[in-house]
Image 1 (tube, helix red, strand yellow):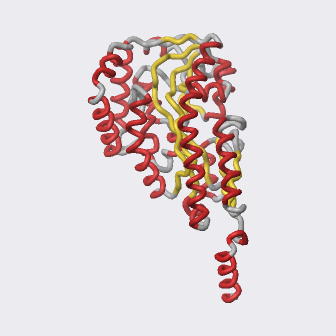
Image 2 (cartoon, rainbow, N blue to C red):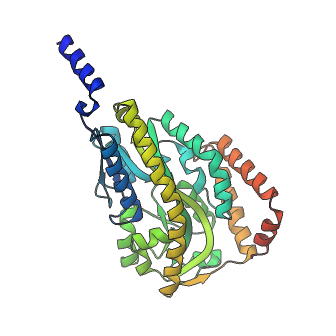
Length: 341
C-alpha cells in the first residue's frame, strides 16, 4: 500500500494533470448577473483552464445558501469552503475586518485610497491568522441613507423606520444615540420589509440599492457618506492548503487581478448608479455643515464606547493617524469640505 501511494504521488508530481480535482464551493448574496458574479465566474474559468481542471470554483449566488451568518456556519461545518462577503459580516471571524465601515470616518474616496494601501495587507494577515485566506478585496463604495422622504436632520430621521443589518453593533448604537429605534433584519428580508412598510429607510451603496431592487421602494438620497463598505472573497485556509502550491499561486494571481478590476469598476458603477437614481426622480438632499458635524460627533461617541470590541484600538488609532497625515497634506481640500463645498 505504501509503495502504491508513493507511486501515485510520483505520477502526480511528474504529470500534474493526473492530480485529483479540488472544488471550492463559494456562496454569496450577490445576485446573478451583477458585475461581481460576472467577474468571479470569469476568474473561475481562467483558474480551471490554467490548472488543467485541478482547481474549480463553484458559486452559489443570490443568497441561496442563506445570509452571511449562515454561509460562515456552513464553512465551519465543511458544507461550503468560502464566500464573497462584506467586511462587516467577516467581523464575526476577525473584528478588524469592519475597520473601513466605522461610521463617518471618511470624507472622500481619495482618503479611502490612501488608507487602504497600508491597511489592506493588515486585514489579509489577520484573516489568515483566523483561518481564512483572502483571495480578493474590493470596494463596495460609500453607503448613503436612502429613504421614502428627504432626511437632512436627526429630528427628521427619528420619524422613519430605519434598517440596520444583523450584528451591525456600531450602526445600531449610533442610531440609538440619534434617538432612533433601528430595526435589525438580515439582508434577504430588506426588500420585503420595504414593500410591507416595516422599514422605509436603509443605508446602502447606490449599486447595492439597484442590484437588490430596493430603489423601487425609495425616493430620496441623503447626500452624505455614512460609511465605506468593502467586500472580500475568502476561503477556508485548511481547504485552500490542499491545493498544490503552484495551483494556489494561480488562484491567488487570478482572483487578485479580478478584484483589482472590481475595485476600479465598482467606483464607476456607483457613480453611474447615482445618475440612474437621479434619472428615476430621486431627490438628493444635503445636510448642513453643522448637522454633519453633529452626526460625526455622535459617531465618535459610538465608536469610543465600542472600541476594542468592534475593532481593535491599535488598528483604529493607525487608521486615524493615516487620515490625519493625508489631510494635513491637503489643507485646502479640508477647508472646502468644512465649507460644505
